Figure (spheres, rainbow, N blue to C red):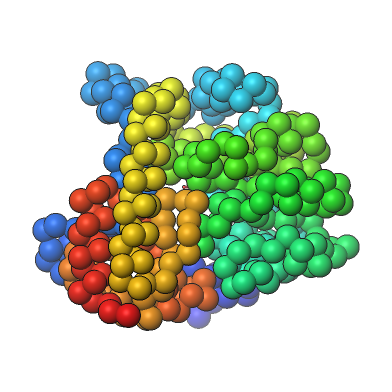
Length: 364
Ligand SMILES: Cc1ncc(COP(=O)(O)O)c(C=O)c1O
């Protein structure tokens, strides 16, 4: 029978497997209490000011949102001392990663990323039938800028680098990164994905925003999904030279961010107290989990994110056992880490529950 056929390459594209939703595990196993430490969300929720605003205000849901994101872009521009035309808003920074593929890559060109990189880069490159080129890590875990350089060819159009990286949690040396950015040929777009930026002291980073607006080939990605606790609203942004932002705007659908999402982000951006509290929770949780991993002789990668990559012998098996106990983590076989799980740093109670369960299901 005749039927519409998707393009042949479509069925070979990898499917993104996200963290299992709490409701799904509750349905599957009939569990009441479930904690999710699988998607690097903020365990403290979001700014209480956001909840308060939505309690007191209503949206006219019949109207389209402000497609230009005027107020949020202006707020971001003031925060970073840049211009609104240097900013693009995305339905999550993930959407912007896809825009980059659509604007800068096509068949016959190459997108370059690390072999242990966030999977969305591969998806963006493959979706437009460009070639994925993978730079080996230095030690199985950390990005090697030397290896990135070796992989640059005359077909390279985009380089994706997450810093800190997901799922390994490593951070690049800032001097080396800056040198790399200066050395990469100017016709190649460097995408510096800083989704976990706010969890660390600014001194650990290059001044990426200033570099991005003053150069012609650097784009910085940030998100409201992590420390701001707004993953459910889907909101990320890019900062770059206005020419790059203009190009990306051509493939953006006009109303890609919802009205509540825009408002929530504006409010969350101002709540320094909540950001500090979230950072503190993460720093303390990181210390607690590291101490417990060491006590139990469990191998882990020191992290600069809100998660740990942990060697538990068999990631899929341990994930299943933890799920049976009402704890959702992420197996990492899809990233080539068959022995590992990735666990998000939770609240103090969630961290304790996780460690207790892990010690029951895995002994080194
Ligand atoms: C490195 C990195 N970049 C981007 C994202 C996507 O974030 P979002 O689309 O929610 O903004 C994530 C999410 O986990 C991430 O880890």
